[in-house]
Length: 398
Image (cartoon, rainbow, N blue to C red; front, top):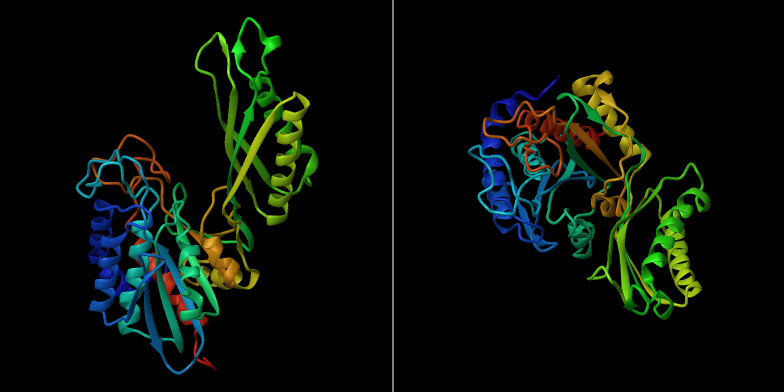
């Protein structure tokens, strides 16, 4: 691997910052302390800072030369509302809050790159360092954009990166097109007429209607969309009744829908609504249908994905840059890719053997209470950020 020597030298100090952030996790839109740490470091290194965008977002501004070209590099800062199982020294000090997705590490990698940019500005243009709040369900990227992120800091492209456990350290994954799915939720309430379980003929039982709906929804996937298009409908909750001998008045279904395209999502929402209302009507009942669109699909633009791949290959070698298989997980970096060309890539986090003594008994997987970010990624991820910006903003004729 061709790592930048200065980043290797600085990585222990950046790792200490990362562990401090891990010990003090903050949930979406509550990242005040985290933002303070980020802003203080950037200011200490002489990098101008803009704060408060998207509530707690931080943007660092690094300029060099005279070009008006600009690139944005993004890291997320928030933690998850879950209890940590780890007991090592930097484990969470706040019950029910944990950096179980590695956003502390993402912040650290971008901070490491920022420190290097502060003294080595080998580019012509502007690098905007976006430290984003509220990726875990809050839509922090959307809120920063609403607050004028790309009007105030106009860029030619935006890039993001996420750690990926289970793959050998020293590998990257990237691909053009959809890499993560849209995330959407639905809630259906079927209203019947309750009664005695021994007298079903004088009641309107919503439970068999709910069962009919659950089965019918899967025909949307198997018969309404093209087989080559991806889509998942998952009914994950069914709530009805309070006693074994009582037919309930109502039954509630909840779950999620995930797709890689807005067109498929539009079709699924329309068909689910139709099936719900007509199935209820066929049994003499009514229902309400609520469909909430959370994150859109994360779709990399081809030019930027190929550019990122070449930069990665220059660092770790062609054979260690893999094509990213799309995942049905969701990511609010999708909003940035809807606003600007760009690429969302993945950096391997290893198999979990990097964890200190005192880690929990579970695997080192994302959203797992035994997870911990691999600090050996800091100089590698930062090298990628630096080389990406330098290549994108290379002086004319270089």
